[in-house]
Image 1: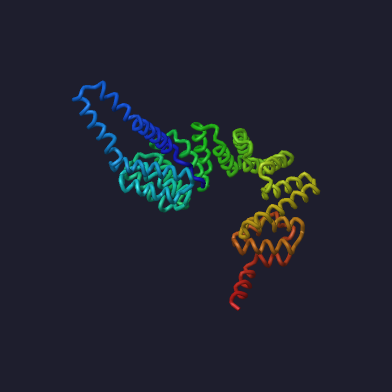
Image 2: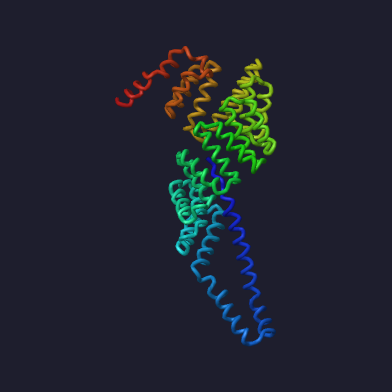
Length: 384
């Protein structure tokens, strides 16, 4: 899951930068001010002002708190430059001077989670922030993101609930809560959570998109299409939404509209292999065989490009096997299916019921590949 950056802390740092700039401007002008004070203010008051100046200017940057602020500002700047390891080191320095700063612990955790993907360490940072400030809703939210990335989805939902208990209008927490509920198969609750997010941020395309996915999983296809239409209203180039919309329209038997939707997805992402493949299926249903063949050829070319980048992409190998099966190219279909199963044995179970492979389903080599005997042969060959 993509983590959502902590907006509250960004506002805090913006205010901090503004304060530091004002202090710097004051320090530049202090000699001019001193001369004005010397001429206009009684001698006894000048002595008091000098003491105050020494206190504020001379010692301000030597306090532990200001050293912590200085390191935190540096850490934030390093974040913006993409130098994340250095940012972590700077937050660690800040925390040496001010170990009870929940914001520094939270930002440290956000960098570990969002950019370095060191989720266990991030979780420890968020827990530390919450130990210091138990009602820190940003830290509860970010903790949920880390837990979700660790596969601890139930705990992630509980963490989002805590964030929302302290900040009920926190749209990012409602969104990520919906996403986690979807992963748990609790789609009705996911829709309700997305609806809450949209109440506070109605123009967020990713919320509309994931709401559509929840409706899809509930079999409520018309509502899914409506949701993706809203996502595309706010982000017309959202090719995942165009593709999902096409799949759903095909499911509803609206093949012409499905093809048009796939075409839009491919307009924004020309190498989108799955869109080429699904477009071919829709054209088949429209009995436009020549166009379907051309679309399948594009799909195979796209999968080849994907495999050139990542030769271990099991889904690409499996998808090519389905395409070759449709073309009744048995050798190519079996070769690609074997490679997919080698990379991910779950594809053997999928192939047993996948209608895309029906054209070769009765072939002995296909049946042999799907049987347990293929595993036995593989084991024997390795043991010799």
